[in-house]
Image 1 (tube, rainbow, N blue to C red):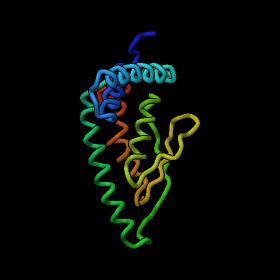
Image 2: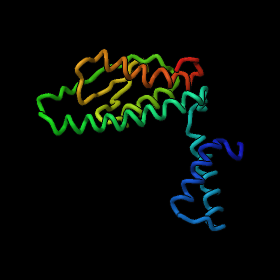
Image 3: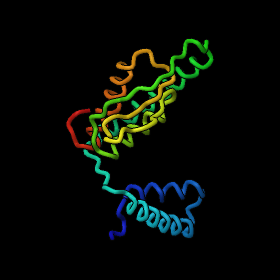
Image 4: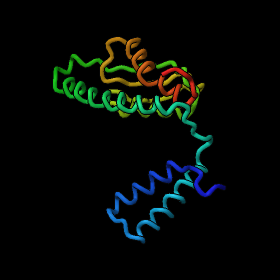
Amino acid sequence: MRLLPAPLLTAILFLSWLLLVGSLSVGHLALAAVLAIAVAGLCDRLLPERVRIGNWRTVARLGPVVLYDIVASAITVARQILGPEDRIRPGFVWVPLTIRDSCGVASLAGIITMTPGTLSVDISPDHRHLLVHALHVEDPEALIATLKSRYEVPLIAIFEGGARG
């Protein structure tokens, strides 16, 4: 076993601990290091496969897109909720998945769930479709196309190393 099986996770945990306690004392630095190494080591054992980031530039481009979509969706959802209830058309949509990497699928589901007005509900047993609930669905095909182009295509580049995205 390597001392730092997940260096990025270890660094994030180390910094998070220091931010939480608000101290750079020797004791807190030591405790942060021990906790970060131990927790990262335990988490590494729980992962069935190694997460491999194939395209860091796409990660940098996807982040702002997701943040923008979260804010824009929050505004849209607020308008819908404050408006006439009969204008809301909730619905479920099965999104066919091109992405095969399990971390990529989990990331896609997480992004969809974090975006107000949408929620990842289930994945088909063959992992080829993701069930999404949306607060307002006028055109299911347009929703699917948006989710695939804005999130799935970049996630394929990130996790499967493709040139797309």
